[in-house]
Amino acid sequence: MDLSPWQAPAVFGKDAFGGGASDTLSAMLPLCEDKAKTYYIGGYSLAGLFALWAAYQTDTFKGVAAVSPSVWFPDFENYVFQNRIQTEAVYLSLGGKEEKTRNPVMTQVGNAIRSIHRHLDDSHIYCALEWNQGNHFKDADIRTAKAFAWLLNRS
Image (cartoon, rainbow, N blue to C red; front, top):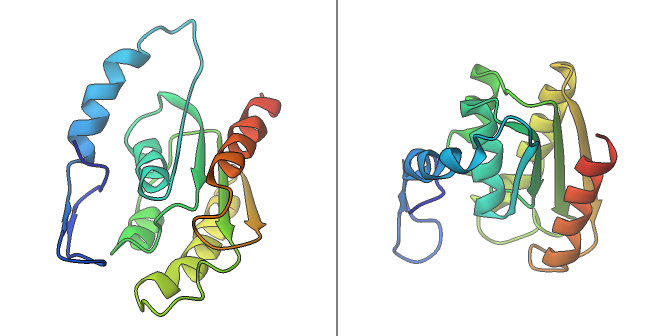
């Protein structure tokens, strides 16, 4: 399965993005059918992008934890502006050094996450944007735990 919402050219190496997020989400949704339970979705990096995208597809998830999400993904920012998110809360985070890279595509991640945060806030979605020390790979586990803790503590 794949986490990218649509096909896109490779950013690193030769492997392009496959655009299989719809299939991944379709496989997940049957696991979230118990209406007595509350479901959250989240992830780190490309999984964070997937989680954010998934909240535009379904109202199944009460909140999204998008930690260092790959919001630099081609056309994702435009997608956010042209569609309506279907969740109550979004936690976004990024490492302070993530936008300071030589890769021209990746340098856009900071501007994109600021813009998406502003848009969600203007859309009256309960949203946080936290900046962390370090680069994309620093403290991924701790940052992901913080994101889910934030979602759970606001419930």
